[in-house]
Amino acid sequence: MDRKRKMRTEPSPSQRILSELKSQGFRLFCTLPDIWTTEIIELLRGDPKVIHVPLAREEEGIGICVGAQLAGTPSAMIIQNAGFFNCIGTIASMPLRYNVPFLLLISYRGLWGEDKPFHVHKGMYTEPLLKALGLTYKLVSTPDEIVAAIPDAWKLAQFSQRPVAILMTREALGA
Amino acid sequence: MFRKECLEILAERVSDEIVVTNLGYAAAWWLKLKPRDANFYLHDSMGMASSVGLGIALALPRKKVIVLDGDGGLLLNLGILVTIAEKNPPNLVHLLFDNRCYESSGGQCLVNVEKTDFVALAKGAGIRNALEVDSLPLFREAIEFALKERELTFLSARIEPEGTPPLDLPLTPEEIKFHFQSYIRSLGK
Image (cartoon, rainbow over all chains, first blue to last red; front, side, top):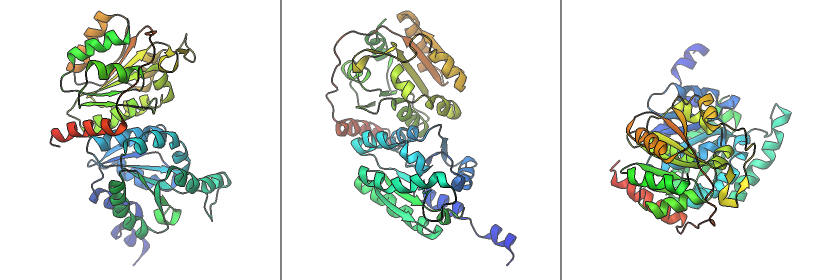
């Protein structure tokens, strides 16, 4: 099978992730791009079946997801770990105080193999910050693992009435 | 004019709209004037009322959502004006109480107190229907119009600080969520 044909017939990791999120009932997506999440955000932008909210700053998205979720619309954020850093205070004071579940899909820059020096600090502080907030998270390294993690993460978020995070590596996003 | 006077007018006019309040005075006065399940009060998270209101407005496009925001709160989350303008929800009324101080935290002066033009900021973000009122008759007229029309509204009310001690919000986050979700369930969505 040549490469072109393969690309046409097999869904990309971004298409598989979005399709799984939609089949789990997610309808509102707050996003701020990382180069790794370019394709999934483009797919959201062109999808009439979802509410896509491009953010000016990630912290806004915490409030938007809380509001939408309380109004009965399952919600997810797709952001970089630097953007997660921007959300810490609001996560503590809002979804963790009002007990609101939603999904945080975080591209995990600064890990082993990172090609940009300025991402390295993000790799160092992401998991300590998630732990400090008491947020449950899973690190996923392949597209199959992300797709498998989404229903479990959502179930756990609803059971615990708290946000749950999925940390996505470059390989997982196929970027 | 004072925030309480504006909220009294709003309380007379509100029927089935959802109201999301900023923390502090806005939450406490609104609870006193119009306690109902369709309210969502912020306990903390200063600046997030507009974001929560946007999320609700997008999730429930047939319900009118009114956000009671403050000038200090809006400055903490100024980018939301751009995000609101991008989505342009016709069912959202962003009501700003502009008293040029952080009243709920002790009345300290707002940053850039003389020069900030919130209506210009909203318009600059792309919110076409942005206006300021500085008297109760104008506030009444503007809010009646905003509740009737299906158009995104940014309404800034220039108010005087109340000068009264801060009020507590006698509700826990659990109670606020319980009441609000009871209301949402009653909509049968």
